[in-house]
Length: 107
Image 1 (tube, rainbow, N blue to C red):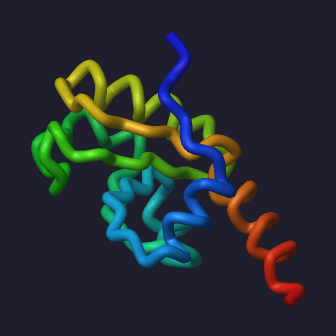
Image 2 (image 1 turned 90 degrees about the horizontal axis):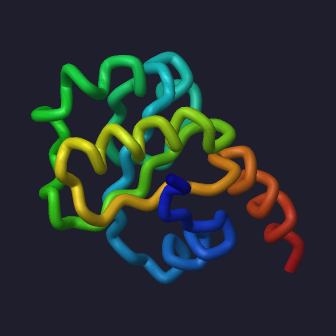
């Protein structure tokens, strides 16, 4: 089953609109420390055993992010299996977002 997705442009727009977003970053801790957009960090490999540590409610919208959108796809499936109802996968991951950011800086 294909996950529900949000594309980088839409996410960037929501961030720029000042929306409070529930982000779950499923990259490794070292990657998260190097660069992150806030939100909670639980590496995808540890997500199943730490599912009860997810700080968001099962009915909240949660946007799962990783570098390229592959690990977040796996995390999306884990969250859905665990009863989370409103999970979006960032399509193309942070790489897609960074590309947009670079392109958006020219005013």
